[in-house]
Image (cartoon, rainbow, N blue to C red; front, side):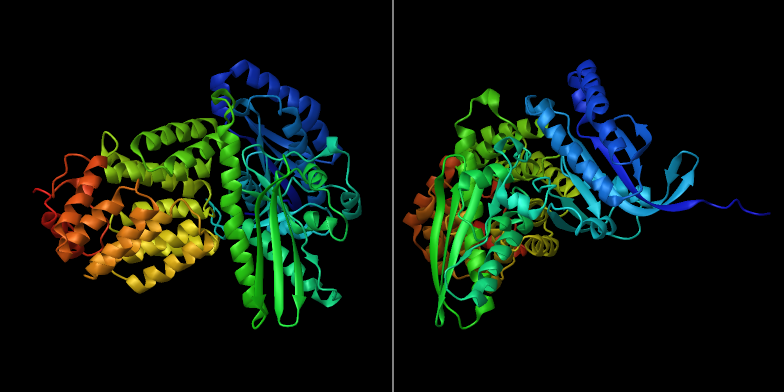
Length: 595
């Protein structure tokens, strides 16, 4: 019996889906339907027709579209997303209609008016991986558009997705780019044409560093520094980083920071210079808040050039390590100036972050409420989920919730959800690693933290918690190496108290009690509000016979956690070896803690 011949063709497949459709419908069913129909009638359907697309089918809150050209499909997607951002900008953030768009170039099977096959399935998976209001495309699609359209493409790496045997290599289309030529961008459009940037994340542009060496051959070194900074910053999922092909268009001309920010749609601009003379190099950099012209950070680096690539890596890491916390600090100040009714998801996360770093029960509880509000506004906000997971960790360890055990379970649930939403978010993996080490899975936690560092080598949080895992595993040399890197990356980090305390735990494990005392005292002097510093000091002093000091430290700890006994579950710490937990408790017995 002859089988029916299957008709196939190569096509660009465009899959779109509304973000938070069920939540929007529950809040305002009639209003959401009316606005969705208006957007389709006035914007989406006309744009699809303009670029030669064919709407294959509608699926409730989504659609599947076929294009003959990938360039037309991506151009259509960008124009739709940019226009949607403008159309919805006056709507309250939690009520805005946003779409995710996925675009693939692939082989499809024709079934009447419908299209089927892997090419369609991949487009659907790409749509799920796109940012809210953003576009994700496959490698095949990227290869067709990268030399034909002038906007940035961010490599998001390979993703293993449901029902697709092979990993899918994903690229994010930067909506902050332009449709016109590089020359036109350099000359700059009017301010009214500024590219809209999603309101929930700050954007930064890194300008080409000025070569002040008087030697045109050194241009490559100045460009290399700026390019490396762009690459390193792009690993932070909290920021939008403008791609080189947009920010470098201002190279060689006098720069007006405010104008650059308007044209690229950014809040922050980094500029710098490089001067080489003989065997030395001087690099300066400054980070500017374009909204008010304030200098958030500025630094100068003088280095020898024995190994030019090592110097380039060191300077890049130092600058990125300073910039990331600087942006967070500026965003926190902005959020704190807003009225409670004005807070969007990002503002809630920033306020919560500042409160969490106080390490006090009432502040941590308020941070939890703000993060829950952020997640209600944006259920797939990975940053909010990771931060809330960390809060559950603090409340569970110190018994600050009604059920510490439930808090630890919630920690893992939130962290796993964050990783599931964005497997390339390094902070989400750190949160899940904390859950793993506190459930006795030290090796698994170590591997996960190593993956987080691979995803974002500049993330101090990942290096720091890798050091914590090594400390509780009685591996002090590995822990010290991690902490050295952590502190170099972020020397003013609010989590420094944890990085100072971790070596004290490691010293307890290896019976270096005097070292444990010294490390614990350093942690206490840095931040006397962090409870664990006192309990480490109490145990270490108990082992060294400094009973008066041990009792005083124990009393300080009991102010945070009253009613303690030796068998209290609030004293369980993630030691890999049971004998290390017993040694810790024995020190507290010597300090006078009752059974």
